[in-house]
Amino acid sequence: MMAKVKGFKALRYNKEKVNNISDVIAPPYDVINKEQQEHLYSLHENNIIKVDLNKTEGDTKYEEAKSIFNSWINDQVLVQEEKECIYPYHQTFAYKGKGYERIGIIALVKLSEFSDKIILPHEETFSGPKADRLKLMKSCKTNISPIFGVYDNSDNKVEKLVKEFIKSNNPIIEAKSLDGIMNKLWKIDNFQTISEISSYFETKEILIADGHHRYETSLNYYRENPDSETQNVMFYLTGTIQEGLLINPTHRILNKTSASKDITGSVLENFYTEKWLGDMNEDSLEPDEFFYIDKKNDTNLKCKIKDKDLASFYSMSVYAVQEKIIDLFKESYENVGHFKSLEDAKSTINSESIGLILPKFIPADIMKVVLNNDKMPQKSTYFYPKVATGLLFNKLY
Image 1 (tube, helix red, strand yellow):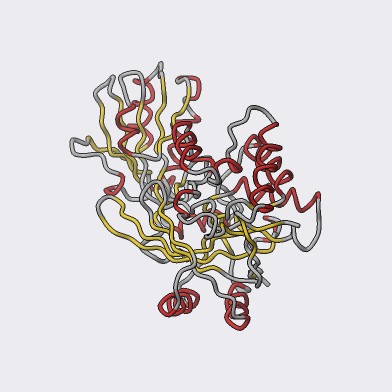
Image 2 (cartoon, helix red, strand yellow):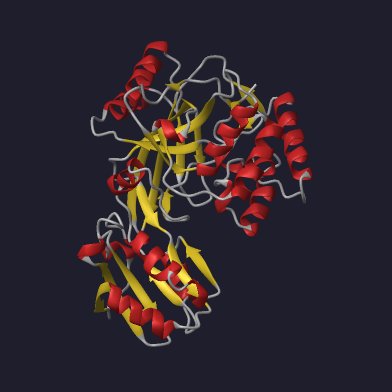
């Protein structure tokens, strides 16, 4: 027995009270900066930011979030579905000038310990965000946003079924994210179809793409409050084999380096390197390559993991960079900056820093790590696009 997936009676915005859902959705809480938070606050009185990332100081914000969320339910700003549903979720977006689409579903997944190898983590987590999310979950008793999970869809069964459904039914939600992504949601309430989707996942493992902290929080909440409502968590599930699943890297910058010459010497010794004069673009890198920029010593390199190190680093440069540069020289720089945008990373590099431009990821490589009981360094992957918060909510009571 593998993943247990089921429908649920989602809470969602009442169109009679909120006519434009685009005004009330938000990006995931952990990618929102202060300016975006302010903008979302001003966008609509019922924007989900007021619950998911309330700006009241200290722990009072969780009480404030609870009060706001409950008032929306009482005032029927949020209404609950009458039947259990699984929700097809379609996103269309542009990235680097090319158009993409991604299809998935939002459903409930039964919680399981990582040791069961049903739900698989791939990154290390921090204690701070878990404490924050647990306080929010305790106050609102609701999954505010879905965890982003991926699964092997080489047989294409769920996609086929969902695409057929989408073709002959109208969406229940259409909303545009801040970054221009179009989000459309349908609902399947047919018992037979839901059973078909559920039984399909009984042979599947689910890899957490985004939401490790929220998943571990849900596990902790369930341990404290074990019952039939808390044993499931809301997931967005999408197949790994599709063009619209982009797994971008998070680039690293070593700030205020005091030994750039030594670091560069070590890189020349520990990797295959070639001087690089062209554009440094993540798209031109293989998974075992990276670009190295040392402005102080006028050194731009394209680096590749040596053959003898490939197996121990899973043929992924993110591991090699972590061990042979970031960890090895941790006394030689002040901190590590993490950048999801290549342009932001490049513009930050100066004569006192060292830039490490990393390649995109392949889902199969990440699975290799996970199935070996291993995890990737913190802030390695950036699955794009993100899943919008505020489309659906799952009550835990």
